[in-house]
Length: 398
Image 1: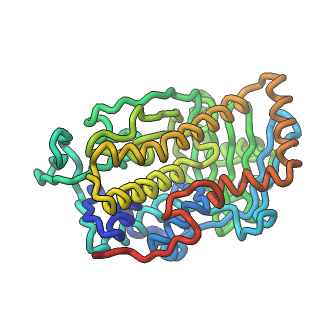
Image 2: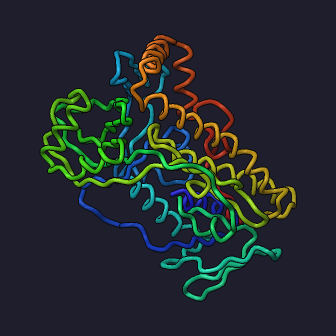
Image 3: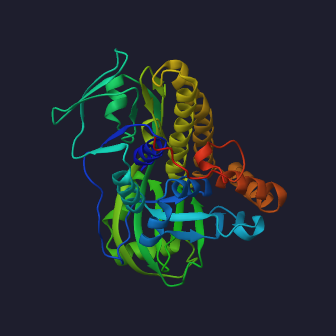
């Protein structure tokens, strides 16, 4: 998603771009089927996708707005509720299947004169020591470029070929994802309950279904994955305090381990990392892809400024500006999510009391709560040009 968004943005600004992809995205699927992997897109991400010209296409496939969010703690009565109406917005964000974003961006790439889609293929070898770095692909094709961008996700081969180390740790948690049919309609409300073993999120889909992300201990995840659908649905309803009643039906389930990861460097001469290739975050706030899209938008700003100033696109003087723009903000978000995970995923009585008091104070904070929501949505703060509300989509195709 992040690499394709970056490719579209650069092509629309007149840069020649080659996007190397191992496989094309799925082009068709049954309307009633919901992808197991979904993202909670912020307003800033929505603006980026609108300005790239793909949001309308995504709406035709499916985007599901949520207008409220409720968070509560299983260890007490503390809770906080956010409402789009309180800040004068139509919604707080959208739940979107990853394949919807991928397909819309891939199709847009195919319409960009300056973009070349190379698929199926992958990077076999990379050389960064010359003025124009070189890629050798599995097909034998060779590409020279001013800048190579690694955007292939958490196990980025480009990052590894570049010798960029990453630090972090595995959490003692596994995330279970599935689509479920609750007895009651979600009412366009995203819900998250913090359990001692990890958070459980119900993310609303437009027809009343929910996509769930249940982060729990590894042994508990193994037990839950081994249950039949009826038993799993019963335990899910109990874990959510039957906030939407029982679970009428459970779709296919998948599980994946959780870890925090952060690249020691985002850039080298002729190379930049964006998205999950640069950082990995706990999914409890759904910020992963939003951070990645902001990476892409920031890199566009940096490369545009370099071109206008006549600076070499792949120089460290240029690319360090991108690293400075994004590394601190990403580290701040990674640290915040790690703190939330550790604060809420335990049974420590003093911490339980503190977090319940904190949730109650946050809910009653009024102006502060509205400020936090607006910041989280990308409505305020320092944002790349592509994510700003007044950005006009007028691509330079010279």
